[in-house]
Amino acid sequence: MMTELLLITLSLGILYFGAEYLVEGASKLAMGLGMSPLLVGLTVVAMGTSAPEFVVSLAAAQGGSPDIAIGNVVGSNIVNFTFILGLAAVIKPVRLDRNIIYRDMPVMIVFGLLAWGACWTGSEIVAWEGGVLLATFLAYTAWSVVASRREARSLEKARLEAGGEAREEVEIEWMKNIGAIVVGLTSLIFGADLMVQNAITLARTAGISEYLIGVTIVAVGTSLPELATSVVAALRGESDISVGNVVGSNTANVGVILGIVALIAPIPVLAPQIVSLDWPFVAAITIVALVVLGPSRMIGRPAGVALMAAYVVYVVLTARGG
Image (cartoon, one colour):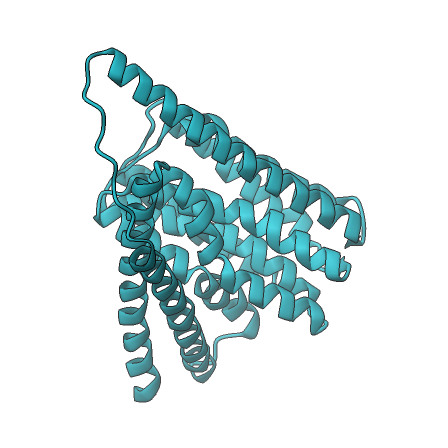
């Protein structure tokens, strides 16, 4: 048991180290390319931190465990939006960019509804449905990049017309920033795997059921990169990366992970809870958060506590259902 505890402690250090490198590299790269930190959070950071979910879901689907493939995605989305975003806000209140409110969170909700519909209307998610999810995600990403660059140019033009001085071009240290992102992502994935494996060993030793391990340790474990990245970004005052990481990861989990896995092989929908509880919970909590938090464009500490409490409620409902 002492070995597992030491390795878990080590994994926490690796996660923090990886998140620091990832956030710093991503924010500097965004500045150099004239991209907003929000866009980088929604794309580069989100896709990178979703790597564990992709590996787990693909292996589960190919290994004959479709419930894990789908459950990992929906469980990770719930963890990301409730526990992780809530914890980041408790540490330091999170500011919401207007694009998150009016563009990205609504798109995230649409992707959740598409996944719910795919699970609801048939006994499996088939190739054409996976193709639609993936194509929609790619179109959304392209639209986000174009819109972000156009908005940045408009803001700079307005600033110059108001008498502001031209911004000095920022020299991009390509190798250094990309290297920091790669080192950060690699450390996050390695640290997450190290923690999950040792936490599962401890949980089994303590007599915790496999089902409860799945909805807590595995779901949180594959989201540890998002957790570490969002918390470190919040501490550094990079709210756009913190929120963009969560929203982008949730969108990528559905569009990329379910999309690609379904294209490789149909994903059977076996557990009724996926349709009756999991996806409805995702839709409800994100819609409520958008309506309640949207006008203020801020997630304060009380809202952060409420989001974390929502995750506890979900775990209780899932454990009772299992």
